[in-house]
Image (cartoon, rainbow, N blue to C red; front, side):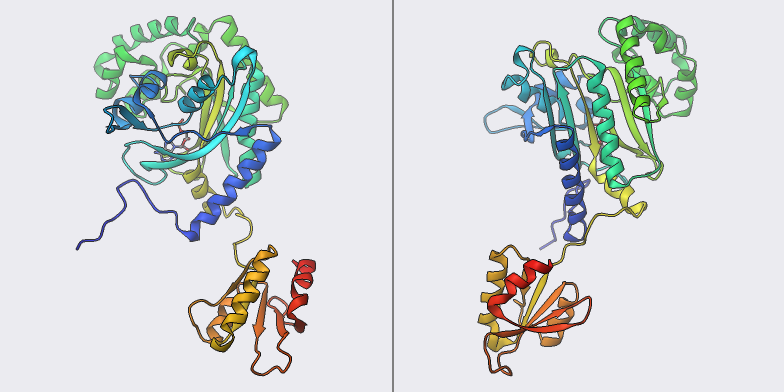
Length: 418
Ligand code: AMP
């Protein structure tokens, strides 16, 4: 029978890698705690309508990247392509932002998009998400951007660039959209095919096109900052000043519109110089109209999504530390005759909170000794030679020194050392 492989665009995160992921998620949890964000777990699948209405019908994600299926109850279900819409749905459904309350939430997990796989781009990928819901002021934007940068600082990422823009709001964006439409219509013949389809539906997305010709046309397109209303302009200035006060550098890119319709005012990306074509490790912004587009009234929000797969790539490339390589503290070495004693001692250590292993594969003394080389201590049970059945040898693997110790003293002894 033929071998079944993982579907294209998915991959297994094997033990040689998974501990690095755990390190990043643990670090993220610590940062979130410092910023007073609480963890939220939301479903991996949602009603398709949440994304078509929330993320936007004219976005690439909704038009061509969603994993959508009809379930056995004839409902249209979609594997989540991003987390923000789901977090907002949860907040609305559970009244987290009722009566002027606000909620600071974070989550992590797999997202699904039918994209062309390449380095740093997968069909199942992982994001760390943070969302601040219920706050309209720029303090929340500053908190979100600075939190993502603090996470990257703790992980040791270098060579990052913050790119910032304002995409306006429901008041001023229609005016800008009109100006863009007129401009691009006049340059219709030079636009790529994809941009032609974007023209009527979502002309702002043309600004994002990576094709050379479209880029050149966009360079001379009307400037969004000339169209921003006072509210959006002030908000943008406050975000910039806030970042400067915290000592963060940023680059303004008035063509940064991002692929999701729900952004209003702030849009930002954090780029790495060590990633190649898929160079964004994090993206986010403000989405004050998302709640109303999914029927939840007026709940402003701002958040970020950080691409875990890409963070791992950059950290490996930059030789960042992932903390300690996980290995048990103690390896209990015993021959076949002493198997039961080894099992009992291992279990005792484990119950006392000490990570311990004994050989479960019947390997030779020499091979057990070799495996013990990864641990801090080797504990040798050699009751055949020792008259006192309670005595064992404890070897410090780094120093090479060893002592003889009573089995019932070992937990106390190790607790003082580990
Ligand atoms: P987005 O949800 O599109 O704003 O993306 C936020 C972040 O998720 C990006 O900056 C990437 O780091 C990551 N990301 C998005 N799409 C993918 C993908 N297909 N594969 C891996 N990472 C992704």
